[in-house]
Length: 292
Image (cartoon, rainbow, N blue to C red; front, side, top):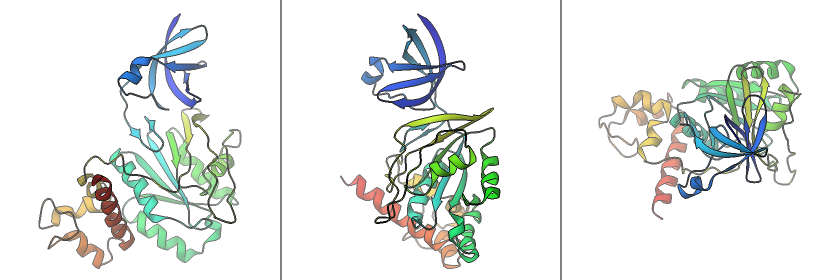
Protein backbone atom coordinates (compact mmCIF):
# COMPACT_ATOMS: atom_id res chain seq x y z
CA UNK A 1 0.00 0.00 0.00
CA UNK A 2 1.31 3.48 -0.86
CA UNK A 3 0.06 7.07 -0.72
CA UNK A 4 0.33 9.28 -3.80
CA UNK A 5 -0.87 12.68 -5.03
CA UNK A 6 -1.73 13.33 -8.66
CA UNK A 7 -4.13 14.82 -11.17
CA UNK A 8 -7.13 13.08 -12.72
CA UNK A 9 -6.34 13.13 -16.44
CA UNK A 10 -9.12 10.86 -17.70
CA UNK A 11 -12.42 9.38 -16.60
CA UNK A 12 -13.71 6.32 -18.42
CA UNK A 13 -16.04 3.48 -17.43
CA UNK A 14 -16.20 4.57 -13.78
CA UNK A 15 -12.41 4.60 -13.48
CA UNK A 16 -10.44 7.74 -12.65
CA UNK A 17 -6.96 7.79 -14.20
CA UNK A 18 -4.57 9.65 -11.90
CA UNK A 19 -1.20 10.94 -13.17
CA UNK A 20 1.27 11.25 -10.29
CA UNK A 21 4.01 12.68 -12.52
CA UNK A 22 5.58 9.31 -13.24
CA UNK A 23 2.76 6.99 -14.18
CA UNK A 24 -1.01 6.89 -14.68
CA UNK A 25 -2.87 4.88 -12.05
CA UNK A 26 -6.44 3.59 -12.63
CA UNK A 27 -8.40 4.54 -9.52
CA UNK A 28 -11.82 4.35 -7.93
CA UNK A 29 -13.55 6.83 -5.64
CA UNK A 30 -14.20 5.81 -2.07
CA UNK A 31 -17.84 5.41 -1.11
CA UNK A 32 -17.74 8.42 1.22
CA UNK A 33 -17.63 10.72 -1.83
CA UNK A 34 -20.96 9.34 -3.02
CA UNK A 35 -22.39 9.79 0.47
CA UNK A 36 -21.28 13.44 0.43
CA UNK A 37 -22.58 13.84 -3.15
CA UNK A 38 -19.08 14.83 -4.33
CA UNK A 39 -17.89 13.51 -7.68
CA UNK A 40 -14.23 13.72 -8.73
CA UNK A 41 -13.78 15.36 -12.15
CA UNK A 42 -10.99 15.61 -14.72
CA UNK A 43 -8.44 18.18 -13.59
CA UNK A 44 -8.90 17.47 -9.88
CA UNK A 45 -5.77 17.17 -7.78
CA UNK A 46 -6.33 14.15 -5.55
CA UNK A 47 -4.71 11.97 -2.91
CA UNK A 48 -4.90 8.24 -3.51
CA UNK A 49 -4.00 5.02 -1.76
CA UNK A 50 -2.64 2.34 -4.11
CA UNK A 51 -3.42 -1.31 -3.41
CA UNK A 52 -2.45 -4.01 -5.92
CA UNK A 53 -1.97 -1.49 -8.78
CA UNK A 54 -5.43 0.04 -8.22
CA UNK A 55 -5.79 3.47 -6.66
CA UNK A 56 -8.51 4.65 -4.28
CA UNK A 57 -9.23 8.37 -4.12
CA UNK A 58 -9.35 9.50 -0.50
CA UNK A 59 -9.18 13.29 -0.85
CA UNK A 60 -9.89 16.00 -3.44
CA UNK A 61 -7.87 19.20 -3.15
CA UNK A 62 -9.66 22.59 -3.36
CA UNK A 63 -10.54 23.57 -6.95
CA UNK A 64 -9.52 26.89 -8.48
CA UNK A 65 -12.12 26.53 -11.25
CA UNK A 66 -15.03 24.18 -11.87
CA UNK A 67 -16.66 24.24 -15.28
CA UNK A 68 -19.89 22.45 -16.17
CA UNK A 69 -20.99 20.58 -19.29
CA UNK A 70 -18.67 18.79 -19.10
CA UNK A 71 -17.41 19.11 -15.52
CA UNK A 72 -13.69 19.88 -15.46
CA UNK A 73 -11.59 21.65 -12.85
CA UNK A 74 -8.45 23.75 -12.46
CA UNK A 75 -8.24 24.88 -16.11
CA UNK A 76 -6.57 28.28 -16.59
CA UNK A 77 -7.42 28.99 -20.25
CA UNK A 78 -10.49 28.21 -22.30
CA UNK A 79 -10.79 28.15 -26.10
CA UNK A 80 -14.33 28.52 -27.45
CA UNK A 81 -14.23 27.12 -30.96
CA UNK A 82 -17.13 27.65 -33.37
CA UNK A 83 -17.48 27.40 -37.11
CA UNK A 84 -19.25 30.26 -38.89
CA UNK A 85 -20.35 27.98 -41.72
CA UNK A 86 -20.79 24.22 -42.08
CA UNK A 87 -22.47 24.17 -39.60
CA UNK A 88 -23.66 27.76 -39.26
CA UNK A 89 -22.68 29.60 -36.12
CA UNK A 90 -24.98 29.72 -33.11
CA UNK A 91 -24.24 33.02 -31.36
CA UNK A 92 -26.60 32.26 -28.49
CA UNK A 93 -24.64 29.12 -27.70
CA UNK A 94 -21.37 31.04 -27.98
CA UNK A 95 -22.60 33.71 -25.57
CA UNK A 96 -23.65 31.03 -23.08
CA UNK A 97 -20.15 29.58 -23.17
CA UNK A 98 -18.69 33.06 -22.57
CA UNK A 99 -21.07 33.58 -19.67
CA UNK A 100 -19.80 30.42 -18.01
CA UNK A 101 -16.17 31.35 -18.63
CA UNK A 102 -16.62 34.86 -17.23
CA UNK A 103 -18.31 33.52 -14.12
CA UNK A 104 -15.26 31.34 -13.51
CA UNK A 105 -12.80 34.18 -14.16
CA UNK A 106 -10.89 32.30 -16.84
CA UNK A 107 -8.72 33.58 -19.67
CA UNK A 108 -10.59 33.10 -22.94
CA UNK A 109 -9.83 32.90 -26.66
CA UNK A 110 -12.62 32.80 -29.25
CA UNK A 111 -11.71 30.71 -32.30
CA UNK A 112 -13.79 31.02 -35.45
CA UNK A 113 -12.96 27.85 -37.32
CA UNK A 114 -13.20 27.01 -41.06
CA UNK A 115 -12.37 30.63 -41.87
CA UNK A 116 -11.59 29.63 -45.46
CA UNK A 117 -15.36 29.33 -45.98
CA UNK A 118 -16.10 33.01 -45.26
CA UNK A 119 -15.17 36.35 -46.84
CA UNK A 120 -13.48 39.36 -45.25
CA UNK A 121 -16.78 41.14 -44.63
CA UNK A 122 -18.06 38.24 -42.52
CA UNK A 123 -14.75 38.09 -40.65
CA UNK A 124 -15.01 41.75 -39.70
CA UNK A 125 -18.63 41.39 -38.61
CA UNK A 126 -17.95 38.61 -36.11
CA UNK A 127 -14.59 39.97 -35.04
CA UNK A 128 -16.07 43.35 -34.17
CA UNK A 129 -18.77 41.85 -31.97
CA UNK A 130 -16.25 40.19 -29.68
CA UNK A 131 -12.91 41.94 -30.03
CA UNK A 132 -14.60 45.27 -29.28
CA UNK A 133 -15.56 44.01 -25.82
CA UNK A 134 -12.09 42.69 -25.05
CA UNK A 135 -12.00 39.07 -26.21
CA UNK A 136 -9.09 37.71 -28.19
CA UNK A 137 -10.43 36.47 -31.53
CA UNK A 138 -8.58 34.08 -33.86
CA UNK A 139 -9.75 32.92 -37.28
CA UNK A 140 -8.47 29.43 -37.99
CA UNK A 141 -8.49 27.24 -41.07
CA UNK A 142 -7.17 23.70 -41.07
CA UNK A 143 -6.12 24.11 -44.70
CA UNK A 144 -3.84 27.02 -43.68
CA UNK A 145 -0.71 26.01 -41.74
CA UNK A 146 -0.02 29.61 -40.74
CA UNK A 147 -3.31 30.01 -38.89
CA UNK A 148 -2.74 26.63 -37.19
CA UNK A 149 0.62 27.92 -35.89
CA UNK A 150 -0.94 31.13 -34.58
CA UNK A 151 -3.48 29.09 -32.66
CA UNK A 152 -0.89 26.60 -31.42
CA UNK A 153 1.14 29.35 -29.76
CA UNK A 154 -1.87 30.31 -27.64
CA UNK A 155 -1.77 26.92 -25.87
CA UNK A 156 1.85 27.17 -24.70
CA UNK A 157 2.39 27.03 -20.92
CA UNK A 158 -1.31 26.66 -20.11
CA UNK A 159 -3.71 23.99 -18.92
CA UNK A 160 -6.37 24.59 -21.55
CA UNK A 161 -9.73 23.21 -22.51
CA UNK A 162 -11.40 23.48 -25.90
CA UNK A 163 -15.18 23.76 -25.91
CA UNK A 164 -17.74 24.39 -28.60
CA UNK A 165 -20.72 22.99 -30.48
CA UNK A 166 -20.87 19.73 -32.37
CA UNK A 167 -19.34 19.79 -35.83
CA UNK A 168 -17.25 22.92 -35.26
CA UNK A 169 -14.02 20.98 -35.79
CA UNK A 170 -12.51 20.95 -32.30
CA UNK A 171 -10.92 17.51 -32.45
CA UNK A 172 -9.77 17.82 -36.07
CA UNK A 173 -8.19 21.20 -35.30
CA UNK A 174 -6.34 19.79 -32.30
CA UNK A 175 -5.09 16.89 -34.44
CA UNK A 176 -3.73 19.41 -36.96
CA UNK A 177 -1.79 21.49 -34.44
CA UNK A 178 -0.76 18.54 -32.23
CA UNK A 179 -0.33 15.71 -34.78
CA UNK A 180 1.35 13.36 -32.31
CA UNK A 181 -1.72 13.22 -30.11
CA UNK A 182 -4.80 11.10 -30.61
CA UNK A 183 -7.68 13.57 -30.59
CA UNK A 184 -10.88 11.93 -31.87
CA UNK A 185 -12.66 13.78 -34.67
CA UNK A 186 -16.03 13.26 -36.28
CA UNK A 187 -17.63 14.00 -39.62
CA UNK A 188 -20.57 16.27 -40.27
CA UNK A 189 -23.75 14.69 -41.49
CA UNK A 190 -24.75 16.14 -44.88
CA UNK A 191 -28.38 15.74 -43.90
CA UNK A 192 -28.32 17.60 -40.59
CA UNK A 193 -25.05 19.55 -40.90
CA UNK A 194 -24.37 18.61 -37.30
CA UNK A 195 -21.32 16.80 -36.10
CA UNK A 196 -21.57 13.41 -34.50
CA UNK A 197 -20.51 13.48 -30.87
CA UNK A 198 -17.34 11.43 -31.10
CA UNK A 199 -15.40 12.56 -28.02
CA UNK A 200 -16.52 9.68 -25.81
CA UNK A 201 -14.47 10.44 -22.73
CA UNK A 202 -12.83 13.47 -21.16
CA UNK A 203 -9.04 13.46 -21.08
CA UNK A 204 -6.23 15.94 -20.45
CA UNK A 205 -3.25 15.40 -22.75
CA UNK A 206 0.27 16.71 -22.20
CA UNK A 207 1.15 18.09 -25.65
CA UNK A 208 4.42 19.85 -24.70
CA UNK A 209 6.36 20.74 -21.59
CA UNK A 210 4.06 22.62 -19.18
CA UNK A 211 1.32 22.51 -21.82
CA UNK A 212 -1.85 20.47 -21.35
CA UNK A 213 -4.96 20.35 -23.52
CA UNK A 214 -8.39 18.94 -22.82
CA UNK A 215 -10.80 18.27 -25.67
CA UNK A 216 -14.46 18.13 -24.69
CA UNK A 217 -17.59 16.62 -26.21
CA UNK A 218 -19.50 18.88 -28.58
CA UNK A 219 -23.06 19.81 -27.77
CA UNK A 220 -25.79 21.55 -29.75
CA UNK A 221 -27.41 22.82 -26.55
CA UNK A 222 -26.10 24.14 -23.25
CA UNK A 223 -28.10 24.56 -20.04
CA UNK A 224 -27.79 27.24 -17.36
CA UNK A 225 -27.29 25.05 -14.28
CA UNK A 226 -24.09 26.91 -13.51
CA UNK A 227 -26.06 30.13 -12.85
CA UNK A 228 -27.14 30.35 -9.22
CA UNK A 229 -28.68 33.85 -9.23
CA UNK A 230 -30.17 35.85 -12.10
CA UNK A 231 -27.89 38.82 -11.38
CA UNK A 232 -24.90 36.67 -12.39
CA UNK A 233 -26.08 36.87 -16.00
CA UNK A 234 -25.83 40.66 -16.36
CA UNK A 235 -22.69 40.75 -14.20
CA UNK A 236 -20.89 38.34 -16.55
CA UNK A 237 -21.71 40.04 -19.82
CA UNK A 238 -18.45 41.99 -19.88
CA UNK A 239 -19.76 45.04 -21.75
CA UNK A 240 -22.69 45.31 -19.34
CA UNK A 241 -20.41 45.08 -16.33
CA UNK A 242 -18.18 47.87 -17.64
CA UNK A 243 -21.04 50.31 -18.29
CA UNK A 244 -23.82 49.50 -15.81
CA UNK A 245 -22.55 52.04 -13.26
CA UNK A 246 -24.06 54.73 -15.52
CA UNK A 247 -27.57 53.26 -15.29
CA UNK A 248 -30.08 55.21 -13.21
CA UNK A 249 -30.68 52.26 -10.88
CA UNK A 250 -27.91 50.30 -9.17
CA UNK A 251 -29.83 47.03 -9.62
CA UNK A 252 -30.80 47.72 -13.24
CA UNK A 253 -31.55 44.54 -15.18
CA UNK A 254 -31.23 46.39 -18.54
CA UNK A 255 -34.68 45.29 -19.69
CA UNK A 256 -37.57 47.60 -18.77
CA UNK A 257 -35.87 50.15 -16.51
CA UNK A 258 -35.75 53.84 -17.54
CA UNK A 259 -32.45 55.63 -18.20
CA UNK A 260 -30.60 52.36 -18.77
CA UNK A 261 -27.10 52.94 -20.09
CA UNK A 262 -26.89 49.48 -21.62
CA UNK A 263 -30.02 49.94 -23.72
CA UNK A 264 -28.74 53.35 -24.80
CA UNK A 265 -25.45 51.84 -25.95
CA UNK A 266 -27.31 49.15 -27.87
CA UNK A 267 -29.36 51.81 -29.66
CA UNK A 268 -26.15 53.66 -30.53
CA UNK A 269 -24.60 50.38 -31.77
CA UNK A 270 -21.78 50.59 -29.24
CA UNK A 271 -23.00 47.30 -27.75
CA UNK A 272 -23.84 44.56 -30.24
CA UNK A 273 -27.55 44.02 -30.78
CA UNK A 274 -27.00 40.27 -31.09
CA UNK A 275 -25.30 40.19 -27.69
CA UNK A 276 -28.14 42.14 -26.10
CA UNK A 277 -30.81 39.95 -27.71
CA UNK A 278 -29.00 36.84 -26.53
CA UNK A 279 -28.87 38.31 -23.03
CA UNK A 280 -32.67 38.66 -23.10
CA UNK A 281 -33.03 35.06 -24.31
CA UNK A 282 -30.75 33.78 -21.56
CA UNK A 283 -32.74 35.72 -18.94
CA UNK A 284 -35.96 34.25 -20.32
CA UNK A 285 -34.52 30.74 -20.26
CA UNK A 286 -33.26 31.16 -16.70
CA UNK A 287 -36.66 32.38 -15.51
CA UNK A 288 -38.49 29.54 -17.25
CA UNK A 289 -36.20 26.99 -15.57
CA UNK A 290 -36.78 28.52 -12.15
CA UNK A 291 -40.57 28.31 -12.54
CA UNK A 292 -40.47 24.53 -12.42
